[in-house]
Amino acid sequence: MTAAAVTTDPDPAPSTATVPPAPTLTATTAASTPVSAPAATSARRPALDWRIRFGALSLIWGFSFLLIKVGTEGYAPFQVTLGRLLSGTAVLAVAMVVRRERLPRTARTWGHLAVAAFFLNALPFSLFAYSELTIPSTLAGICNATSPLWGMALSLVALSEDRPTRRRVAGLGLGFLGVLTVLGAWQGFSGLDFSGTAMALLASLSYPIGWIYVRRTLAGSGSSTLALTGSQLFLGTVQIALVTPLFTSAPDGFPLLPTLAVLALGALGTGLAVLLQYGLVEEVGPTTAQMVTYFIPVIATAAGVAVLGEQLSWNTPVGALIVLAGAALTQSRARTPKPAPRSCGLPRNP
Image (cartoon, rainbow, N blue to C red):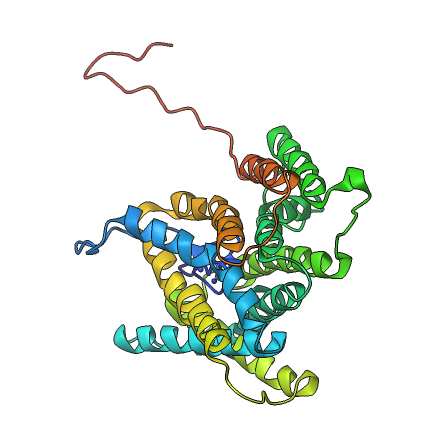
């Protein structure tokens, strides 16, 4: 999940007036790209119903944590991230050529995109890859679901324009109670790998930092969402390409399964997923599109248990449900009363 520039990965994927997207992630998501305000509905309707595309996006981002785990069995974490970004950038580059999108023109925009690429792609993707060396993919997927909680926490220290309400603060408390449940706090965190879990949580924190930065710096840049997102992924690829040789050596070979996992992670989880979410935001709006966030940990957990045979104790799914409930509360908004309809020629009731 997730997918970060001006649409969403999905991780966390937008028009030039960006708002924070659902955390992907991305998984991966997710994105990892910012989501834009909904555009006017195109006269040409997509071939596939939006519900089918929504389900496909949930599956892609939900399986991203499994793909990371498989990728790290054959490659170093930085190499997994580099392969992921390369293949994801290639998919968006093709989409930009097909749609005849122009790259951003100003140095200022490229500078802001470089910062966004670090917080929404290079850093969280690498942290998740390193974390899954020592923790199950199920736990990484659940940690990813804490991104809305971190976003709410940042808003409390005035790093966001959103004003916290009692309901949203309650959601923050409930969500972190869920995190403690997942980690088994009453058992003294016995058997927990602290470094791996901390890296997964830091990756989830990185997304809202990036989203807030994007919203404050790239709104009104004049470039399309797709152009900004593709450029952001390209810059994230360059960043990781510069770092990878410093910490890893060239792989001895290219094992089939890990290689396919990394390519799928990038082409599907970071490339195609961004395009899917981009289309969903335009068709049904960011509120509905970001609901994919709540399916990611469920699918990630099911995939880890069914495919990888990871063990699951009762507190993991229970804590995950509490986390999701808290995250949903932190995203809630007060309802604005609808004005009473006017009758023809008759006064409204006072």
